[in-house]
Length: 234
Image (cartoon, rainbow, N blue to C red; front, top):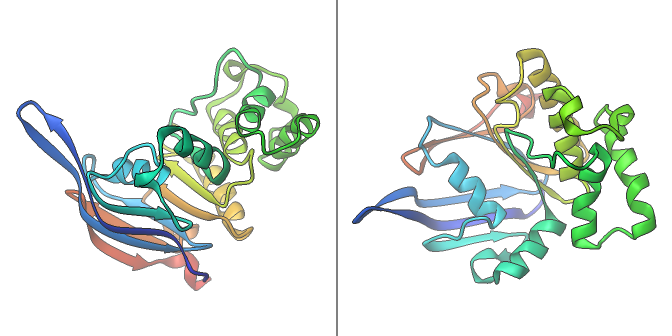
């Protein structure tokens, strides 16, 4: 393991609800070392997605600090956060969020166009290489609607890898897939982790021990369990 990629200290995130407020994350502290594969589990409303959004800079903590790769996210402007996110973090969601009017390859190229990190003449080739990596290279010129759910999720993973981010954040990436396809997607994440990428995945999968090394359980916005699990013993 290397030094911490994620360093959360006493983070609180509240949302207004009428005249009161909801505490989604409650004085949470967390360290994640480089190269870890961390599964975040818990019941609906436990704060899992809010935690992931804090790590991605999508939400800002109400109090406390969130540092990723030494960058204090809470002090960045929205434009600086967008640039940082585009270069350093890959995001994968349950519902794929591919743009329906772009081809699969164009969807993968979109983060490259935004971050301008990959030379323009190399972007199409990189998109094709990434689609090959996730097993759908033959779908590059199709529209997302022509793909199965599993293929769309693979395309979304390829898009998340577009700018070669060191950190992948995934929110229920198998929640919309059948069990066989979910297993294949989890195996793909495990392969990406083997390459040295740090992964934090919110999941309802019961048998995450085959891929993740660490499981964090949230309840009412707090960590109630933090354990080493199966993959670390392999």
